Image 1 (cartoon, rainbow, N blue to C red):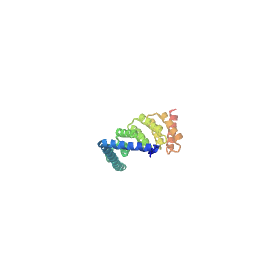
Image 2: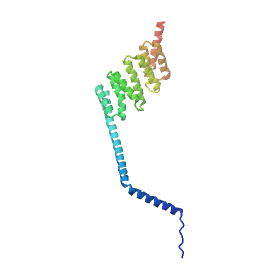
Image 3: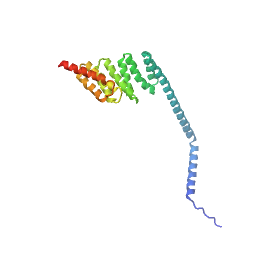
Image 4: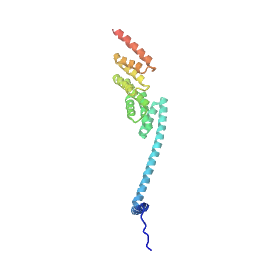
Length: 230
């Protein structure tokens, strides 16, 4: 009796290809066993390194935050020398952490309190250039630079910096103060006409500011001085 031939189906073809592929993989694995083992070991090492780095970063961030808390406590207690030393150490030992970037802002204020205006400006500028999203602190740092210029008697540069604060951070609660400070610097230089539009801008753009009475008072003084000159 003749043996009936089996007709290959798609299932058979797929099964054969799967078996062939499996056998090829097994053969390749046996041939390259040392390489594969080495690759697995290398992958595990990478995982361990990444895990260690992540753990180290978390530990560094925690330590930096503790440093920052201690330093700011010293600052609040007017122990500016201790605050300065702690903040400087923080930015050196834990550079790259969130706390180290924030420390630049507090360093600027600490040096300002110590009357070291050049160092204060340097740290304020570094803070402004750092990758942060603390808009209120950035506005304060920019204002701090203007304060430094004013304390050094560089009134024109101070006035320009104060106006820059308003232009860059118009929604900041510090914007009205920056306008008054800019006007004050122009008055200190004997340039009263340049101060008037700043007070007017304050009244127009920030009518609810607590500094509006100050602006009104200064405008009256400027108007009276102008009448005397006539």
